Length: 451
View 1 (cartoon, rainbow, N blue to C red):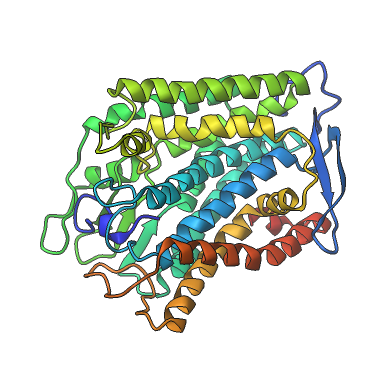
View 2 (cartoon, rainbow, N blue to C red):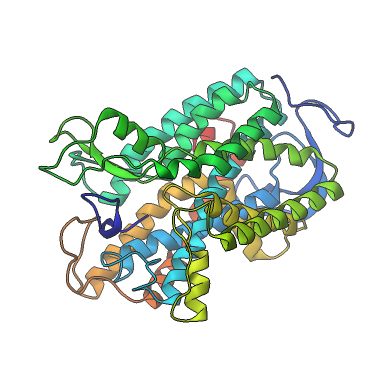
């Protein structure tokens, strides 16, 4: 989440089953051999020695869960920084004129979270189809869950961030909003051929920066002109910004996550799911080659410095800061280069993770990856209340949520405290996530698939 000090440009300136393959045993089973494991239904612990076998209905793919678990834990770091670090109300941590390398990299590593989260949500939708859902059943699940996620964004998650019920500010809609709308779009897209869905997603990611040339009127706050309906729609689709829903003083919404290209990211992730129907050796080879190619494309296109991101890199005061400038790509909305930078290494990670995970740390991360929405909701409350508790305990000013006025004096702590709070939050969440993973393993209630 961005600091309110840097929000916006204006007022808050600061088909039935998938195609069959010869090696596929039957409908309803992903027949690729991948590392899998089971969950003890009473404790939620991942039990037994991991081994290689065909993935049966409801079995989990460890490599996917491990990657998802890693990005969920890193996401908690970002939100812990939001509530504990002294600079959060002062400047954007990627502002090279004011940041430090440690602060920049603390923010930069969290850039991997949202793209991988959305991409793997699309992949998970494909897995559901492969495990036996019809397209009609999957489509209904996607649009109903999408609506549910949008509702969560404006209620449970908004309260976790702001700790108030004053809806004159509706909130800053973030990744769950984008995930919800992307699921609704995917509910329609899955009825197209898989190659068409994949091409749609890739083209949206590649071409959407052509819209950077369009710059709509931003709202500058009370007393300034309210953007037109067309400008508001464009902000929802492609340009971050805040605006009153109607004429001011109607409730104000800040669109932090425009829907383009997130819809494309999920569509590409859905098509990517077919990778897990390939023979294992071939799949691993493709994962590595595609991951390296996407990462190389990021380096090459970024070096050219003419397309793929509205922010150009430049030579800085030192070689280190020049490298940081090269990595400093745009997240709101995510540029082509942002997506290449994050999704390429994600595919390399999936290649690397296709081996048995025998250590306790890796198994714990897999547990987090098996309950991503449950973890996502709880980590907001965990980060916020840890931040409040630290400020109270150390006699610092307490803010319940983002503020649009001057930053409070003596607010926040250094990165050491932020990292310690993050580790504490992760440890606190693990038993809860292990318990809920056990609930999902032993029960088949329909509502569990919505969390």
